[in-house]
Image (tube, rainbow, N blue to C red; front, side, top):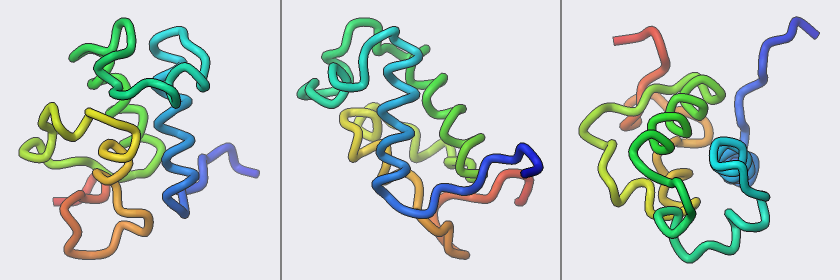
Length: 101
């Protein structure tokens, strides 16, 4: 292996990555994150956590989310964060591959 992280191929893998990043950033267990009614109900889930999770996911997926899609509602739940990233990143999607215009 060359050390590069493979792209996330499916939504369940991406969902797991969201949970792992949130748990790691907040110092919580993945189970605590999964049980929360809303990510905003988690202690410490604030704008800094949003930025950290978003950056981690953009790096992991290779897709950059356009600024106009970064709204509070997009970070309400694991599912809403996951929905920001198309699983295959098709051309013409709302997010862009990093490094492209």
